[in-house]
Length: 153
Image (tube, rainbow, N blue to C red; front, side, top):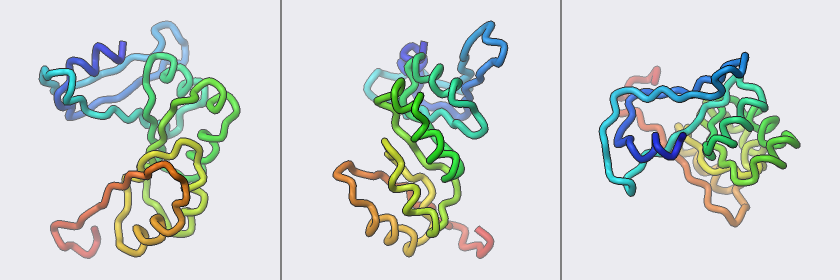
């Protein structure tokens, strides 16, 4: 299961969770380029839900996955508020992994179990998120830095 995978991963260069629609083999995980590690230095596995149905998210949750990422604010809002996910996945944690526009910040900060925003790309957006986040829970953010100084990035 996922616990065995977590125990054996030091760094995963690529991974994916596949959901078979025929349900013959359920959910399976492919992890490539891994090294063995001790149990206390675990990477965080974010299962990306882009274009995945609610049933697939619930199945992954039942298998032990707790952290899920979504690329689009509307999809994240819909999935995080889905009655089945709310009822059957009480400890789910959501990461937003897409391009965040300032106009969508209010929608994003109201997502139940919102945990991490991985795509803060400028100071103005960071300030907006910081000002509007009112939950007592801590919101983690990842800052995107343009180290090449290319204007297109």
